[in-house]
Amino acid sequence: MNKKTIIAGLLPDELKKIISAYKQPVYRAKQVLDWMFKKGVLSFSGMKNLPSELREELDRKNQPLSLYQELKLTSAVDKTSKYIFITNDAQSIETVFIPTTKRATVCVSTQAGCAFGCLFCASGKDGLVRGLRADEIVSQLLLVKKDNPHRPLTNVVFMGMGEPLANYENTLKAIRIINHPDYLGIAARKITVSTCGLPDAISRLAKENMQFELSISLHAADNDTRNRLMPVNKKFPLEMLIKAAREYTQVTNRMITFEYVIIDGVNDSKKAALDLAKLLTRLKCKVNIIPFNPVDAMQFKRAEKARLAEFTQTLDENKLNFTLRRSRGADIQGACGQLRLERTERKNLKDEGRGFK
Ligand code: SF4
Image (cartoon, rainbow, N blue to C red; front, side, top):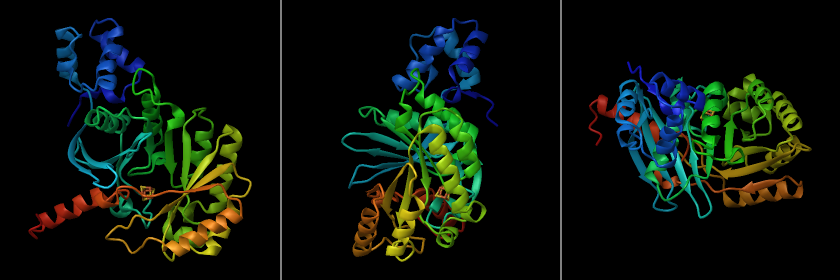
């Protein structure tokens, strides 16, 4: 069992405490952070301006980060990279790097697996293993940054594996670290937390006085369809979710983004578009319409072009503030949890002696 303290998950005061315990001046803490978060040096031995006795002390009881990279796939189409990282207790988690001309976005995971079992999502297929610690969330960014030294990270989205608000404390601590100028210094408005819709946690977030963006996975505007797609809706139906969202916008004066993955024959009808426009009337929000990224093992298909056109035209006519997105990385299993799922299935086949290469 690894008992070492992971520096990537420490706020400044926590790190200063460690440095002081080694009878070193506290400015050494900032030097350690500079090496890790600005220069991408992820071993104590490489931190050349630290006294050798401090490097040795740090090395004995601490480690800079808590993951290692097992796999990386890069899309030939849009240069999106998907990573599989392994935790100290051998859990695999996924992280995606999405470079565009203007941005370099990292999509991080907050849990190994997920308890919520959304029907269109590979992450929920095997259930929840455990929540990730703040250091494991931050380590994903450190490794992606090191692997892409010429693209400063501009945006972070908490949309990978797991439900961030079901791992509330670790998610918020990771955001504080990512946002801090001595660490990655990514502006709060460039950080987006995505939830499947936990009303109590949304109400709690509203009181945090933090400026990051909140995004809610909606995917249906009637309870029957949403119950089918997202079992969480049976516990927290749309009425509860929209009430919490409305309160959130009132308390924070911030806009919420709703995500709507559009799926063939499930939520792509004209009536579904009308329901969506009605549900979100007078709510300070925008909606991202995202064509479904097909996952081999699942029963859904991408909506047909004509249906998609009718859907977006109906939203237009009803004056809903929306953007039609494109899903990226389809050629590298870009959908949430898909790569990890494939890895697990490959391993199972191997374990069963079925000769998978
Ligand atoms: S969409 Fe999010 S909440 Fe739903 S199963 Fe996937 S990771 Fe979990």
